[in-house]
Length: 517
Image (cartoon, rainbow, N blue to C red):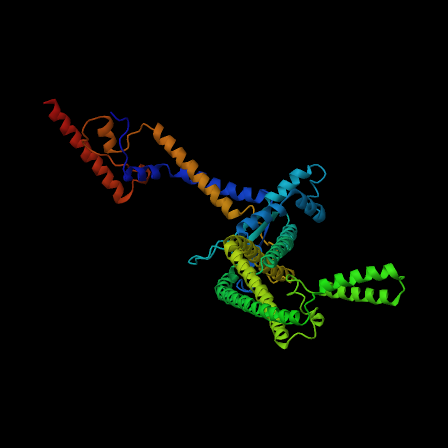
């Protein structure tokens, strides 16, 4: 069984009419206390400024920026650096802030107090745009004095602008120096690869991949030349054999004719002269004219015998010993000797040509056989060289772009912070706000009044309506007596109320009689 019945809107209105002063009085008192509190609390002034982030003056397609860090991250990093203990302490000492508390409050607490009074808020992009870049940020500084708040806000704004310029320029310079160092190392590697490639090309001249077709063509053309030279050499050797046979026949014929005229050979004549010299030496002295004449004949004959060419030495010494040939040789023999000498020159020339052609063919064959290995090594060297060259050109391009970006930052034509609204001098305190305090007190008073009404209604056991009678007493309601103000019992309303009371009394008596019966 529920202890209380469910209230309707009419019940709530009735409660509000009965307990209205419990709500109105706390609300008025709360608003009054809020206004009084706003006048009593120490005032604080807030200086506000807005900083926009301007894009570089030159588009990114012409000069690529070096600093690519996210603006939100960079702003957070700058905020931490600017609001660091060292910089805020320097600002406190430079601007003589908190002069009253400087002697009795630790510096750490003053720095924390100043840090809490500085608020940096990023601006949101315009609604409806797809851009996610940070358009700017605002700086709010709240201090006890308006002039101090404006001065500190201006200092913080200058710190942000200077820090942005310094950070961007430092990053650009560091990037340029790093790329320059990397470029020097890449150039050393490129020069090393270039030297290795040049040494390889000089060592394998004619064996490179681009010479393979040429070597095949030369080798194919070398075979007919070797065959032609071999045929020419064989033909010359045949001519030589034929000429030698003719020469031997002519010489045999010439010797035969000489023997028929002078049957004594030079060796027999030499022996005769030597015997004659022995006989003369037995009879005469060494200075005898006959002995001297015989000795001269022996010496001349010995020179002739010693100067006569053998069969093995006749061919290579024909040019030198041509003068030694007897003047009485027939013209046919001299012509054969000259022809044989010319044939020997031709044979030596053809043999030398064939050796040269064979050596060239062997060289070409060795080049063709070693071509796959040389080609593989050459490809490796070329690939390393191309990789080093591409890396060097890429670094060179990046170094040049970084130099332009650094020069752009030095000229302050890159991304910059621009003050949209300079820090203003606040005319009214930002804290405490009388309106907010009054409204807050009013809300607190209303809440307190509603809580009091709830408590009083919960503890009140009075029966106010017909529904309360039927719910609590569980008996039917015979009549309702409206409330009447007897002090105002004048006029028509008073007469109507008296008549209603008399009518109710009569009905109560009739009902009682009926129940007694």
